[in-house]
Length: 235
Ligand code: NAD
Ligand code: ZN
Ligand code: ZN
Image (cartoon, rainbow, N blue to C red; front, top):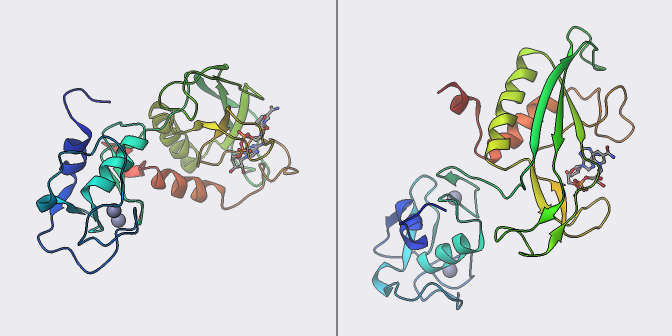
């Protein structure tokens, strides 16, 4: 979290004032926008009724200011905010991926469906550890199964673009998360976040392999949903 900025100050940066709230409900608390926020938790005292509703500046969706502040406080407080309705990202979204290593190199073999190029192998390594305040159970250990995890991309122009964006996603802690594995049901473990990777090399027995002609476009879309787009990379 950046110093010297309260959650309310962060949230306000992305809001425009709303003088007359519409006759609609706030979709965070399901109470009328014209009335008070349904959020009763801590940390939102002091917000005056006169400024109780805000409009997100890019997408225009409106919420109780208290509800947005509560939502921000429930996240990892990185200075960014995501509209819960349309997922527009304000600021730079980061995740809660635990510390680890991302490496890659080119191997001289072709992936099924990409016969004309070599292959980029990415190796992720995350050791088990103790959960931080940004994780579901702070202070509790988390496990890390199946590491190092090897992932494959075609060494084509588009594959290299995906790699470049994955490196940005890694720096922003968005590749993995800590939670319950949907495959094994294990809680408090390192899991893939919302960006799909191919972990199978020469076949596709798991559904996480090649050939898959839509894979690179799907990953670009998933990265965009995390706020990482081609344009940012060229800056
Ligand atoms: P998860 O089961 O909670 O699923 C999260 C996302 O990852 C989902 O979108 C899912 O489709 C995707 N996913 C699931 N299995 C995947 C796989 N094998 N390769 C690529 N994507 C996959 O996520 P998770 O618990 O992190 O991973 C699923 C399982 O895969 C875990 O049990 C992990 O141990 C295992 N795994 C093992 C190895 C290994 O080398 N032994 C490598 C990678 C993953
Ligand atoms: Zn509300
Ligand atoms: Zn929105």
